[in-house]
Structures are given as structure tokens and as C-alpha cells.
Length: 592
Image 1: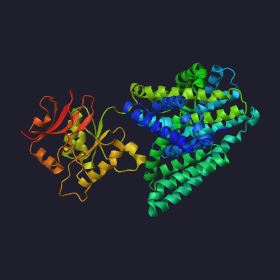
Image 2: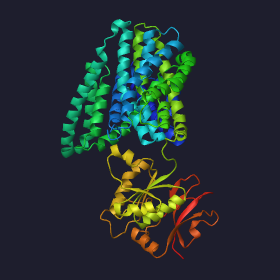
Image 3: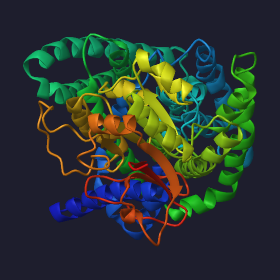
Image 4: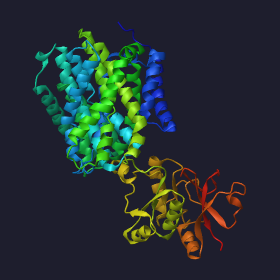
């Protein structure tokens, strides 16, 4: 019998898990690695060093319910990203085949590989491991896609497959688990899978309808309660569905998120932004705890076979399955190849393996103790392989998004075009958001220009800011520029969003500003810059002179410093960036 933990022990364990989860994600950001590549080894090592982070010790019987609720919230947030506008007719058939024929082929192939590589497991356990390994999931796919930034159609295929395969794969694993637990074919009921899906769809539809009605009222009368109500209803739908049919709650929450993503009558941006933050924390906590639950001895005993299974999945089963289901599709060969290279396993696979392995072991099913270690090796291996190779492979296959700095300039007037041209000459990518009357002039100057949407909800923000690293707000409205700076900082970060100096007599709004976001100097308003360019001033590029420094050029005002690798550092009001060897200066030359 497990001794109840004291309050101090619980606080220490919870605090350590949170610190490791958040710290690993921050470290991954610094190292420019997918967060999952750091989370798994950190959790595994922490589980070796202390039992405080081991879920069986810290949470006991609460662990599995916590995982179910957390995964349900993750799937709800993933459903919010499933906009039907993203899944074009070109990729729709591919997604359908991947989650149907592809899932079946992966299950049978992986099960056969497990049976061949691990002697004595038994057919039922091999089929269960194969079913668990069908699951990929948004906890790993979406962060890797955000890190790799592949082209739109490739990202759409992998995103939809990853999100949809989670509940379907989990339901398949539940059916196979029931067969294994009851001792073979007598536990098989052909209608089980469809019954689970049906319950999930019904509860999800009811939950979506209730949420739609409730949010309509809350947004008018109590808008600050939208987030709490959304979270409560999503969790309520998960619990209700799971109480009726095991794991059907995943289908319910996914369906609710997808419904909210595709309706147009209510605004869900506040709930989305909160859930994005919550999901990042939950992903970190789940990965740390699941990794901590695996013992080194158990991993060591399955390591040779686990590596062989990993190789089989990565270089044979996944590429062959994708080649089969994309045959005759409209995807190009290089796009099909990249889809065939990406199939990481994540939280749902680990949580399912942990739960089912323990339950089968408790009833004496032979080989059940090896389920979690085998799945853990595959999870860790696929995350490392795809996390480290995804970017280079995407670039090699020419499906990766633009690398380096991409500056979004809001404005299409002469000043915006002059600054954009100077940045482009320095090797920086430039994208203009301009009105119809100025797009032609921008394109004639060799600049990419189109209409943009600012201050859109976060469901559309990812597409609007695709590949953008920095932003310059140069519109003719000082008020708009000030508000947009505050909004874009949440996406691009401080030190990456700047605005033209406001005319002190024009703005209606007085917003807090330290000058750190004002380009150049406070006297360089849009009207002043336009006047100087009209009088013959030029925006020029020249190599940095480290000896004299830019301040000695009395006829020049520094606007930007572009590093040797294309990184952008703006000169702001009272803040001159440090110069390094190989930098390029972009200056406003005001003298003849």
C-alpha cells in the first residue's frame, strides 16, 4: 500500500515537474531545437535521479485521469487549428487515405515488426503495440511543423493527419487492448470501434452546440468568462464521453475544437490564445512525467529490438505506406517524400502504452511489462530523428519555408518602398502589406506586395505571419502603428517590431512607450522622411566602419544594422545597436 505523500513532498514534486517542463522548453528555444527533443531526455534523467517526478509516486491513481484530461485539452486546441480552408482539394484525398488505409497498413506492418523482433510477446501484445504506434499526434507534429515551417500543402497534410490520427489510433488501441485483456478473439466485438466513434461524435456535437449558444451570450454579457466556460465545456464533454465509452472523449473534444475553428458567427480568439498557452505547459508536463515513469532497466532490456523497430518504422514502413496512399495524388514527388519522412510519436502513444501496459500486467498477460519501454524507445527515437533531420530534409527536398530574416513592412508608400529596397539589397527577405494603389509600384521595385490583415484572430494569425521574423509599422496612421506594435510583440517578440515615429500633434491615443520601438529618431516621422526623400535624401547601404562608428557620420542617420547572417538590428530612439565585423549599415543620407 502506497503511503500518502506529505504536503511538502507534493509541492516539491509538482514544482520540480513544472520547472523541468518550462525550463526544457526555454532551453530548446536557446539551442534552436524542437522542445520535444529536450523534454524527453530531461524527464528520463530526472526520473532516474529522483522519484519526486515519477507519476506513480507523485499522483498515484490520479495520473491516468490527469493524462486523459490533459490530452483532451491538447486535442481540443488542435481541433481549433483544423480550418477547412487549409485543406485544399489537392491534399484532401491524401489526408483521408492516410488516416484510413494508411493507419491500417501502419498497424499491421508495425505489429508484424514487433512480433518478429521481440520473441515471446504473444500476438495480442504485438497487435496492441502496433496499434499504439499508429498514433502520432499534435503534441509532436505541430511543434515540429512550427520549427521546420514546410510549404502550405505539406504542412496541411501533416497537420490534419497528426490531429485526426490521435483519437482514431487511440480507439483502435482500446479495441485491441480489450481483446488482449480477455484472452483473444472472444474479446473482439466488430462494433466496438464504431460505437466509440459514434459516442464521441454525439457528445462532441452536443458540446459544440452548447458552447456556441453559451459563447454567444457570454461575449455580450461577460466576455472575461469566455475562456473559463470554453475550458469547462471541453473537459465536461471529454469526461461525459469517456464515462459512456472509454477514450471516446478524444473524438468529442477534437470535434468541438474543429467546429469552433470553422464557424464564423462568434469570436473565439481569447479562448484560443489561452488554450495555446495552457497546451504548451501541458505538453511539457506530460512529456516530463511519462519519460520519468520509464525505468532504465526496462529500457535496456528492449533497446536492441527497439532500435531495430525504430529503423523499420522510419526507413521502411512509413515511406512505403505514404508511397502507397499518395499514388496518383496531386502532390509532387518531393512533397510525397517529405510526408513519408515525418511520423513522430507523442503523448497519446506514451499515455496509452503506460495505461494499457500496467493493466495487462496486473492480469498476468505475458509481455505486458515490455509495452511501455518499447513504445518509449520509439517515441524518443522518432522525436530525435525527425526533430534533428526534419529541417535539413525539408530544405533538401525544397519544401521548407524561407530561412533567415523576413521583414513584414506595413505600408506601400515611397518611404516603405525605399526602406524595403534597402533591406532587400542587404540580403533580408521583405514582404509588404500595401493597398491596391501602391502594390504595383512596390512590385515594380522588386518587392513582394499584397493586402494583409492585421489584428486578426489567432486562428488566422499563423497564416498571415507565415515565416515573418520582424515587422515595421509604417502606415499613415500613428494610432494604428502604436496598437499594432503591442499586438505583434506577442507573436514576434520584443526587439522585432518597430514603428515609424509618430507626429506629436497627430495621434489621438497616448500609449506607453520608452522609444525602444521607434525607428531611427523621434523627429523622423513619416511626413519628415517623405520630405527628406523628396528633397534628395537617400537610403543607402554600406559596410560598417568599426573604427569610426556610425555616430561620426554627421550627414547620416542609422536606421538598421544587418548582420553577416541576415539578422536585423534596428536603430531605435536613443538606442544604437552594437556593430560587428561583416555588418551592413542601412542609413538615411541627408546631405548631397
